[in-house]
Image (tube, rainbow, N blue to C red; front, side, top):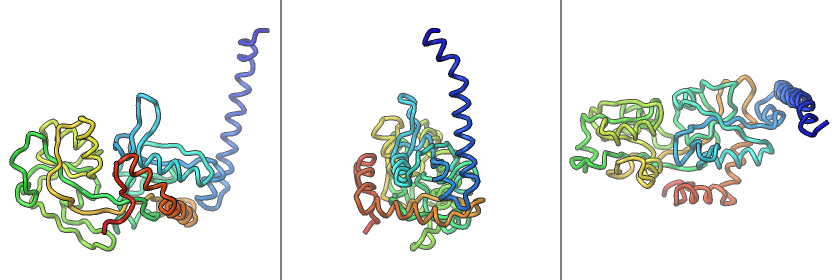
Amino acid sequence: MTAARRGRRRAPLVAVLAVLALLAACSSAGNATNMLDAVQNRGLLRVVSDPNFRPQSFYDQLIGRWRGFDVDVATEIARRLGVDVQFNSGVFEDVQAGNWQPEWDLSVGSMTITPQRAERLDFTSPYYFDTAAVAVNQDTTDVTNIETDLAGKTIGVTDGSTYESYLRGTLELPDQGSIPSVIQDPLIVTFETDADAIDALSAGDLDAVISARPELQEAIDNGTASIKIVGGPLFTEELAAAVVKDAPLDNTSMVQRVSQIIDQMHADGTLSDLSEKWYGTDLTQPPA
């Protein structure tokens, strides 16, 4: 019997053993009494993130895997939990609304902590800090003062984002309270992702976009969008990992353990190194 034919006869057995192992892992996770035990019994942390949110998270088609700052952070969290990691695509509006249990365990997607989201999600310690910024088309010459020149203009934002809340005058942030918008009477256009909004701006379909400054800068540096940033930061955000508050399994120990890991990553410089790698600067310390 040739080696090839031996391989064909053994293949069904290998497949059966793989299925049995998967079923056993699922059974072990199903017998857990809390989320952390379920993850560790399963040996896999299922992370939801955005596949088109460069440089935070993106699926690199050329190499067939996820990359980005959030991806590296989540991978390190999983490593310190002693489990593997699996990344899953999620629409931001659903993620921030908490509509993702029991499919995924943890969101590591640069989500801002807000009182409204805290009604549906339990947040970990923040792992970095970001600023919101305004971008316009590269050919725009009549927007120099965002407080006056964008009044009544068409502005793109991600649906359900803090940028949308800011324009609607409903944004609240921890330790900052209500954040009033300096842009009067905007015509708000929502998109599924920030990248979609940036593409529309680059195509001339919008007057401006509000997004995370690092993502806007990445689009400029990579030449993927004909845009430019105008004005200073609108507000600063605390960004954290999150789990669903009303998950089927108790999440208390999960939030505590991931927060402990994030605090350790702050203390040992891991987060600073990852920030420098992806942003070229350290965004892991709160602004003075």
